Length: 384
Ligand SMILES: [Fe+2]
Image 1 (cartoon, helix red, strand yellow):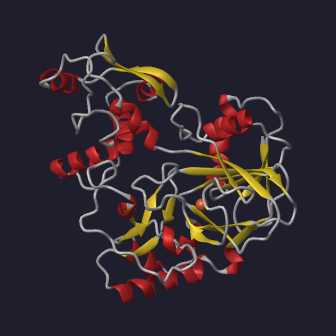
Image 2 (image 1 turned 90 degrees about the vertical axis):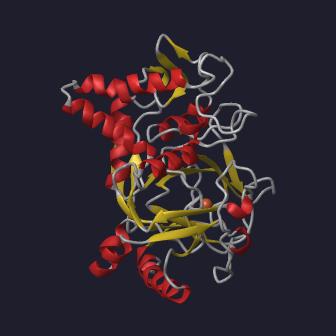
């Protein structure tokens, strides 16, 4: 596997070499290339089966699953209407920027396209940090922005939505599409360790705590640099192209559509499925011989031994021995009502931990284990 430059301000073409499943080394190499080339990779190695597409993407994380447990397959097409956003222009956005946990990585494969069909535009939110004045970057590091779905204003960013007060978290009573709002730091580091700006024209409503006019002015100043034509990459689709991009450091757009057939197959990663798995842990059924048995983790089935404190806490639960009771509960009626993200936020707020991501615990656990003298191979097995 190797990469070559493309005619773009960021990104690279990856040459896979063989049609075989990726080896462990190649999986690591693909991750490295995604970071090295600023979050955009293009593969042009001929026809790509669903299986191969899934194999490539799984090197970068966990694919979002459909209800049947299989990777969620979507088609972005202008050939029928049973698809997301079948027609029209889409201004620059990150998919699900308005979600507390947006997709880490997206991919599109040119399944059935006519050359000359509508291209896809990409802009890098990570590389723009080097082009903004230092004082501005410093200020942005102190700011959070509110993002909304704005399904009704795809082409009209000047149309405002009203942020509900309070925002009801996903899954709780009263929650609905008008609560598709999330706040994210204006600059943060993604799970690949890349520092990035996280603001986009379609979903970002305003900076939290700033007057609307001041917030709009600041956003326009940033967008003028971010979307400068010199820094935007236009991907012109050719049959069998696969484009993989980091959805937190690279944003995308669809210009005014050309009326030519265009069907793109999409798979994406989602961290949210991790939470779903934990929510399904039953207190007794899944805690076998002092370990929590996970049917499906990032590395397949595995057993996670809870620490002493966690075990004592589980034992102290009123329903500890009820095989049908779940470990994380909110509503008596059962599964899916309570997202671990919301639960985690409550725990952090109660413990005064501030903005700590669940994922950060993995790194902390690994560091603590290494400091306690454990060897790296055991630490690797421990955190999966
Ligand atoms: Fe999109």
